[in-house]
Length: 538
Image 1 (cartoon, one colour):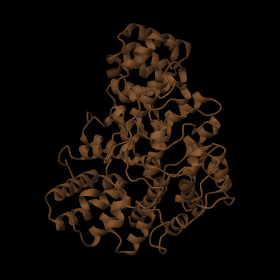
Image 2 (cartoon, one colour; image 1 turned 90 degrees about the vertical axis):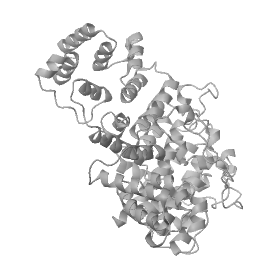
Image 3 (cartoon, helix red, strand yellow; image 1 turned 60 degrees about the vertical axis):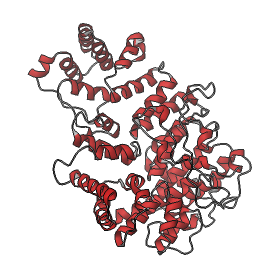
Image 4 (tube, one colour; image 1 turned 180 degrees about the vertical axis):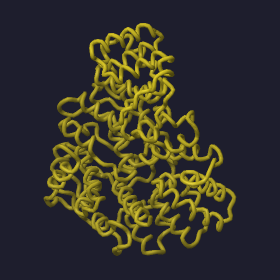
């Protein structure tokens, strides 16, 4: 399939049939599908489940394990949410195709998630699925990091696809940890490791590995860079001269690498224009010759280079916002960067930082009227930056303790439905309005009492929670053991539905519910309605 449009058309065509079972009846052909949803389902969209820039062994640290769930009478809903720690010990003796960082059983996924699916189809799905709401971004990361049995076909290619997608959404540290556990003795895998190593540092360890096994690298520029990095500048110059003479390096690259090896040459001649999509290696070379490339104009993975603040607070802020939007940066880290110092100017991002800090101060000192006023100021700032979900995750529990009025009260109620506490806080505080009653029904997995047309997609989502069946095609695939494939297809279908294809959206949510991914169904539906509503206001 050549592009996303073709992919979307084909996907829609595969789910036109009616379901063979009613919503709520288990798929008894598969043990995993015939059991009720457990607390592990909720871990798939818990924000603590995807934390970059931390030690991998602590990424899935526990958060509020004793917090009860409100609807205890629902047999298929967990009473507690316990977010697991990453299992860094080998769970079995997996091959490269099965490598992962998370025990799938602890997040409610079967070990044979991919076993019955072809790797080429999974590669296409992993590469092309649009992550239209934050909960699906978190779900994708869990799927890519789970230690499960590999698919049919080229398992190395599927591992490379997993790594590629993790890198694309900015989860550089996780991708690097996954790759190092898989092993780097394959040239294609080593190429990805070198990219990751240069995104997270100067690649010293990577270059040392290349020195031991030079056959792992096919990239002449990387070989020259690493030889120099290991201190043998004369040999690096010799390799460059040889490669240039043999035509292994185009003139522009040869000139850039010559300036990298000779500081005097870099000062006396203009640096060549960079490519539109530079590699991490090229980024590091431009940095070394004194002409660093601004990461804001580069693909998302390059944002990680500015998180340490070495290039200034503004690039650090911009990088943090980009990564938070993709779900690759935890809200607490965004909070820490936002709070480092006072805004240096006004306009743009500085107004957002000023509003954020004023709100945080008001929340600590009160009174409620001041908190409400500052919330009304900061909320549109966070919405314009696409950061309402992490903002809600940070402050919703504190806000729930205050008595707000008017517009501030409505904002706080929406924040409750965008937070991990959507099932408890939302129904507790928002049941006195038509919108609140509608959202509360979705948050608790019930059919809404009546339609609420003022929210985007509300009618379609109401139908999905009122007994709509999953597509027969997906049911058959799930019964054949293609669980992961069905989840990915449902995520792709959700993105199509988010663009206005109502049937696709309803079938996606119904499929999540049929698979026992109730938390995914609820959070993705709530996020889509509320985020689209905020977007329509701007």
